Amino acid sequence: MNDIKNILVASELNKESYEALTYGITLGLMFDASVSCIHVVKPSPIDIVKETFQIGSAKYGEALKNAKEESQNLLGHIIDVIAQDLGVGEVEVNLKIVSGPVHKSIIDYAESIDADLVVIGTEPGTRFLQTPHTNLALELIDRGSTNVLMIPSNFRMERIEQIGAFINFDADEIQFIYKLMKLAKKTENSVKCIKVVDNKSEVIKAENLLKSFERLFSGEIGSHQVKFEVVIDPLPIVVNTVKEVHNIDMMVIQAHKRHWDLYSSFSSFSERVIKNIKCPLLVWKRTDDAKKIVIR
Image 1: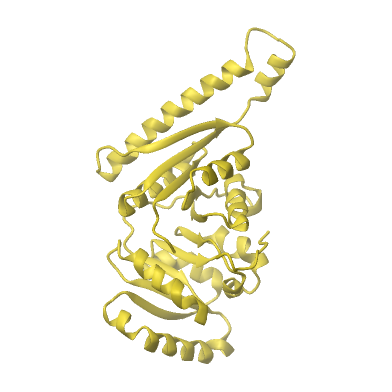
Image 2 (image 1 turned 135 degrees about the vertical axis):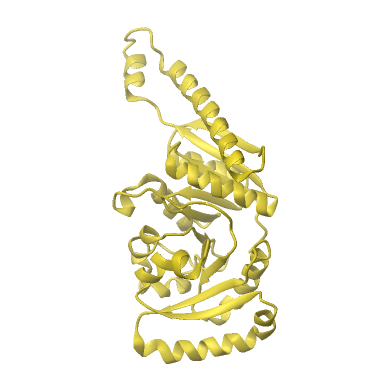
């Protein structure tokens, strides 16, 4: 896990995007990172028809230009409000207003600026796979070109004091945990690594693995850099209460197939996990040697 130096927030100019932008700016201040925000202006079908058939004086190109200018001004105002709410006066956010296919425009821009992290606000009220920005999150995770941070609707950003992670006590997670500890140096607490067990027959095995990791990281535990815990509960309950029960402000999971075993089958990841998150969930991109996963 490299340092976060280049953050991109995808905006739909809605409440969820406001929450995502607030979180992205907060991370930018924490990690002294550059923050960019992209908004894709959607073409108006009415303007397209008017221009195509030369109806009236309205021109699609002119309407699109006006829409871009309005979006630029509105996002600038939103950023000023967020800065005031965070008590930091002014913040610098690089704005990019474009038109075209939403997903392709955002993905292309993220790659062009070499974003370390794309922050996306998730929408409530419909099935997960029918919402545009959470679909975008899945597409970015599947591509594996960047890290993706999903902000649940109605999540109130205050401070990032506790970072957590879902782990399986696998040997190949050791380096991941060290990188998490580095990330958590910007917070006030140690990393909280959680193994979820919803099958009682697996409890003894999980507790033995817990003891092994506690021995391995005894020094780091002693210096309050990391904590390990086995949680015995159904997964949806754990996911829904990580903020309330564990006071975690951001959960992290690796985008490796072997790390998705926690969720019984990675095909159910979207329904059982992302749809239920009550605190931000960061999916760290897979390494070059990791196999491609399909999570649709």
